Image (cartoon, rainbow over all chains, first blue to last red; front, side, top):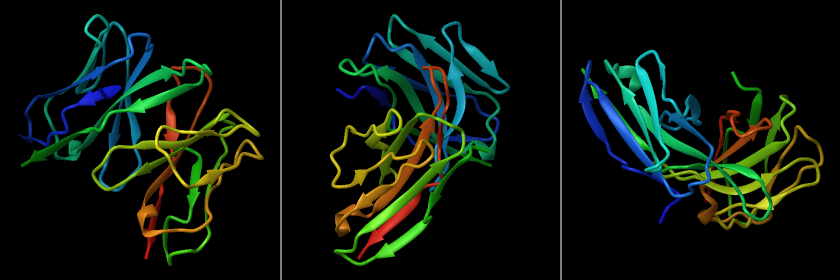
Length: 114
Length: 113
């Protein structure tokens, strides 16, 4: 089982639609979570961190459910410029070394059409 | 914009050549990483470093090697490039603490003929 699992999509939605992505993670000890955005042939960039109480940044809302080990990202009023791959990212600590590393999901591809 | 740089951005090279991909950051980050990503595929961690003189293998086995002689510099070397090494290589760095953002460089797109 992968440490971070996402539906690869693609999700095809019209402009103005609301779309939600989900992600599950395997390590119950994980403490921090993020959504990154990656445009085609570009490097990933942080979209938002995910806090325990849920958080919102403009049209984007992130939720965390620790009991189910589940993270979500909701995008309201989709824009053409939202077309990208959204990567679910979980911070994990290596058992032997204590080294903190980010584990990336495969990403969910979003295509917003006019 | 993140202060992390990679050179070259694009490299086309013949089989058997030795290559070094450069990565540098000016943020003073101790933790640095190398990822490999094929088009449309997920990121794979191939190397990481806690700090100067620390290097570790990542989750994906790679024939490349890395060094960390200075905090700001984390080069990746392939002694003898092969077509199977064709991929995008992304360097990243991160500050202390689990809540900190990880910054990526723009990547090096390597093609081995």
